[in-house]
Structure formats: structure tokens, C-alpha cells
Image 1 (cartoon, rainbow, N blue to C red):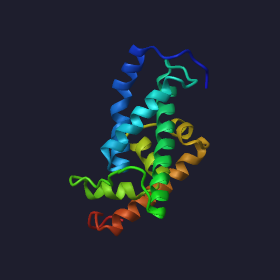
Image 2 (spheres, rainbow, N blue to C red):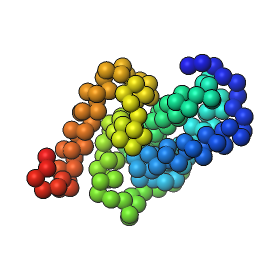
Image 3 (cartoon, one colour):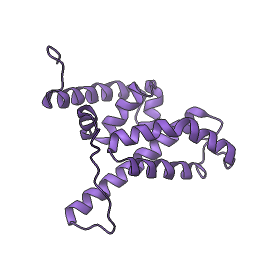
Length: 169
């Protein structure tokens, strides 16, 4: 990554307007918690101010944002696991299961973070294998295999929940 100068406020606002909603949508679908998703988006955009990247490279910024969001999401999920294990919560953090969540969204949330990120980047963000590899931190040749496995796990989860169309599988 090339080191860049601090991002001017107007440019950060444009980046937030163009990339923020898609990142927020991914995190909302992944967590089922709009508050947590918004917190993570805010954190990663604040970190972007100090990130050693070129703000004029849209691909580099998008890659950075998804990597940072994935890292923060995993940190938050681990923290929740530890808190549940020890039955201790320093603050009241609601566990949200949105009533309007579809069965598919619940299945999507049941995937591991890396699997859901791979599927999201490939099929929602329509990124190519090289772009996905940079975000996930693997070789581009591995993305095809990882996507195959993630699709297989998603298909199995959909089938277990009885959501697969008749004759499919």
C-alpha cells in the first residue's frame, strides 16, 4: 500500500456517501444488528483518516474498508463470545434479532465471517478474484476454492432450514 497524505474532509464525505451504504448493508446482514453495523462503519471510516493508503484509488479504499470492517466485526463477535462464556457484560448490549429478518438472512448470519464476506464480495459487490484476495488476505488462486466451499456451506445451511426450492440441491 502506498502511503498517502491525510484525506481531506470533503473527499472523506464523498467516500462515505459512495461506499458507506454498501458496507453498512453488508454488516447489517452479517450481524442482524443495525446499531453494531453502524458503529463498525463509523470506526472504519475514522480509521481511514489515518490509514496509509491512497485515497484517490477507489479500489484501495474499498479494499481497506472491507478488511477493516471484517477485522472489527470479528473482534466484536469474539468479545460477545467471551462475555457469554463468563456471563459478564460491562454494559447493556442488546442481542438483536430483527423481526423482519428473512430466513435467508438468518442463514447468512450463521456462516462464519470469512465465508459470508467471500460470498458478499463476489455476489453483491461483484468483485473479481484478485480484489477479493486482497481483502481476505489470500492468494487470488485460492479465492475460487474458498468461494466453492462457502457456496457449498450456504447451500447445506439453506437445505437444513428447508429453504431450498423443490428439486434443487
